[in-house]
Structure formats: structure tokens, C-alpha cells
Image 1 (tube, rainbow, N blue to C red):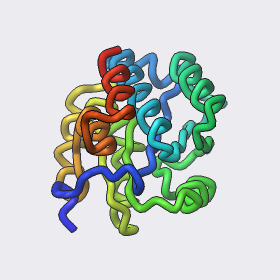
Image 2 (image 1 turned 180 degrees about the vertical axis):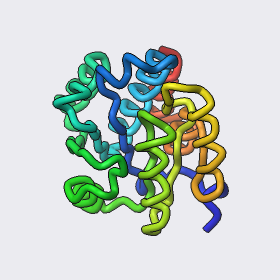
Image 3 (image 1 turned 60 degrees about the horizontal axis):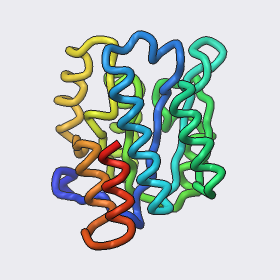
Image 4 (image 1 turned 90 degrees about the vertical axis):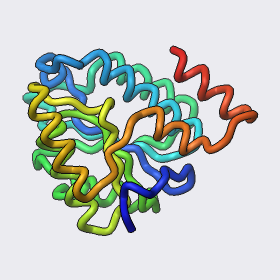
Length: 192
């Protein structure tokens, strides 16, 4: 399967939010934009009953998930969203047993990846999951690195084996059609 030709499927995708933590996010140029975009994706995933996995890299050193995203995730949990949290020390999420268990438990074979940093944890996770046969989509506008060049080179590298896409592409592919209540809810999310 050519990853560039696959669409995000509402019934098959899980959203993985990688390491959007206070101390790490503080070093990112596009911090606010990425956090807003990831929040929109999380709300869309929850609306479609897609599972979410949120990772934190060595939280003792890098701190908790940024407060504004934590607020969104808390509200989604209160509404019944399926959200799993995984603390890790490996850069590649797939190298952590708790992550692989959480992903397997979703029953999903399509993974939408977002987070920090594109050239480290996101890339290593994307390539490892693709090697395991997952259909991987990396959301370019929902990822970042400390340096723009690192982000761009990572996206170029990823295009060789996974789908590099945008947040609105993911959201509209997952919703699938206009004229529905979900579509109206999606429009409200996109316009915020």
C-alpha cells in the first residue's frame, strides 16, 4: 500500500499525541500554533470516537503536558473520549511496551501522529510503526522541532515511507461528508 494514497478512515485511525510538554514546548518557535492544531485534532478524533494516546517523554525532566492541551484532553475525557496516557524514556514510542499495549488495545491499524519533536520522537515512531505494518500519517502542521530545518528534513525523510499530511486533510477525510451534524461540529472546530 502506498501511504500517499490512503485516506484517514474514521473507523480505523487512532490519534497519537507525542510529548507536548511544558519544558519541551517552551523551546519551540511554533509552540502555540502546534498546540492549537493538536487540540483541534483531538476534539475531532473524540467526536468520531477515535482513540487517543498521549505520551510524555521523561516527565520528571520535561514536565507535564502543556496546560492548554491538558484542559482540552480533560474536557474530552469528561465527555467519554477514549484517552490513554503513556510515560516513556525511549524516543521511539514503539520501543515502549506500555505504548505498544495501548496501541494494540485500540484495535486500530491506522495511526495519525502529531507532536514534538518532528525529527526525533515523531520520526522514530512513524518509521517503526510503518515497519510494523501500520498505515502512518504524520500531520506536518501539528508537529514541530526546535529548529525549522530539522522539522523540514524530517518531513522529507518521512515522505519516503509514510503519509505526510495536514490537520484539515485529516479532519475532513475522517468526517467524510458535508451536510451532517458531525460536519457542522467540524466546521465549528476548524473556525476556532
